[in-house]
Length: 303
Length: 254
Image 1 (cartoon, rainbow over the protein chains, first blue to last red):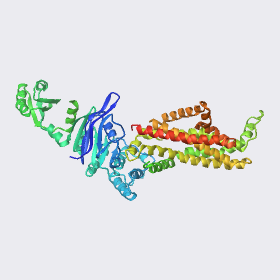
Image 2 (spheres, helix red, strand yellow; image 1 turned 135 degrees about the vertical axis):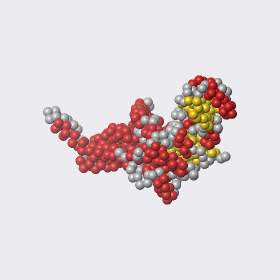
Image 3 (cartoon, rainbow over the protein chains, first blue to last red; image 1 turned 90 degrees about the vertical axis):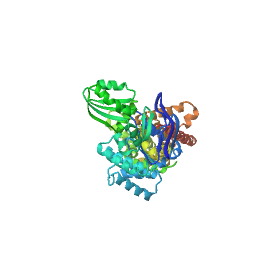
Image 4 (cartoon, each protein chain N blue to C red; image 1 turned 45 degrees about the vertical axis):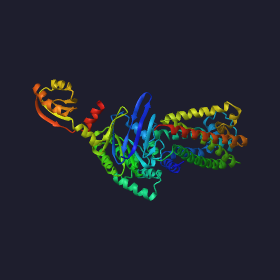
């Protein structure tokens, strides 16, 4: 597999706090990589290190085969911050022209690409100065400027976190569209966004990468050993006894619905009916479930 | 210096399309037009305000007119320059705009130097324009006005301005807040003005003494060797300040 971003034992300390702790990222070429983590997990710090905006305390980084912080790869990447800010006196098309010139794009090609991006982001014909843009418009302009140089990798730092549902939908649709031509490295804590557009995930917690694999594999791993159980009666004693079993991995109780994860599925399938009977509980649902990314994320972070 | 030209062009556009185009040039031109008039009418104005007091004022000359002009530029002008430029790097950093720009192939040195050049050139140009206005009215209102003295003094003022602006750029590169940058600039100015107290050479050539040489050149009493020496030191100071600003900003985390 060809990787466009790789980090090796990357660390970043702020005083005694390890914001990024021995991070080993491998982002495959062509993937839409969801860089997941709760607030304060170290996502933004990692992105800033990858972009050369912040220095690492230790470790090595390779972006597009170039060792960081050489910055030789800046002309091949795009970046969309969480809340992009622009020169308020400029118009959107002017900012794109300015950004394109920084990449030394020939004027004719730049004009064509600028118009195409304004069209894609729905900003074509907007003559208002950027100072008068809504947050969603700024985000879309941010996406357009991140793509002006036809980047091989686009870094996006929580691109949808500040948007309303319509703005989010528009940004996610654009990400899906551009994912056909470049790698997208996309940090977020909104799990549904990852489920919608990403095909690979890295889960970060307290600066440590706790899981990195394809979204399908991750869901497969967790789908195979999870059950949803609907019981009739008080499940508390049943849950208490379940927790003592060696084959049980995790139990999440929500009133009379239980989400069980087992180390040994056969043992679970054999013993659960007996335990239900022992505790005189009725059963209205027993199904093997595909866990949502949210379930997986909560479990991984809790561990 | 990659992309210096594009960054410089952007800064010039910003100067022309924001309030900045009105503040410093407007103020300078106002001083340019009004200084000779104020100098001319001040004695009669004072007499008419308090008729019972007998004012004995020396007769005002073209030297006083030039002096009034440069005094205004040195006080209000410098203050306006600091206020309008102190946020030039700090504010962009604070608002995250510099993140967008510096993740493109823009060296931080180009970023800093473009800021300096694009702030300095319009102000220097406006200073010359304002001087022409002052010279015109001085020539009309006062006899025997010497044009070259005023032009020379304008040159010395521009050299002084170059140092002040480099100081503002350094302060702005050091901090994330425009107000803090303004405070640091004032602190730098105080230090700059204390330097002449430390040695005879500094009292002749340090950039701060340029402020005194402006009046001497305008009046034709300056020793040209000392003035050129101070200008050379000012150029050196600008280079040191801007190099430091580039180095400081290159190490800043955005």
